[in-house]
Amino acid sequence: MTQHEIRAVDAADTDSIVDVAVDSTLFAAEDGDFVRHMVAHYLDAGAADGQRMRVLELDGRIRGVVYYQPKVAAPGVWDLTMIAVPRDAHGNGHGTALMRHVEAELAAEGERLLVVETSATDQFVATRGFYRRLGYAEVARVPDYWSDGDDLVLFRKDLRT
Image (cartoon, rainbow, N blue to C red; front, side, top):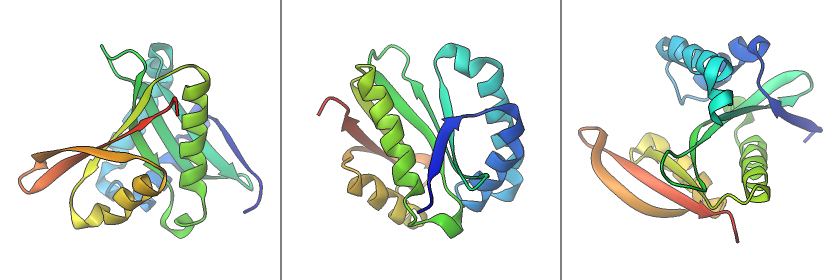
């Protein structure tokens, strides 16, 4: 892989982040405005509240995005709110690089846990495998959380080990 840069998000990245999120299949095309709102919220208030959004840039193009935030009332616990890499870059190490960046950053700050919520549907089999390969342990399932028949799957990783 050519050298990449992981950096903080700025307003000029918004359209590229929407494109990456939709192309990743994490969001449908009609969810583009939701992603745009998520980026705007982060830029307007989220960063001031401790939330973080980073992009992976390769050869001048955004090839991944990650959004993570501290859990309220759980000191040292962070939530991975979103990670997305375009389909044509799946398997190229971009998602792993973003996750390792998040883990290293939070561990260096003395944070305890990173938790990830995902879906139990067949569409997310590869996603769940990705987290397992990175050392995340499945610790809970909540039946019918996202919708009837779509369970929430909760993963965690201890950042102190």
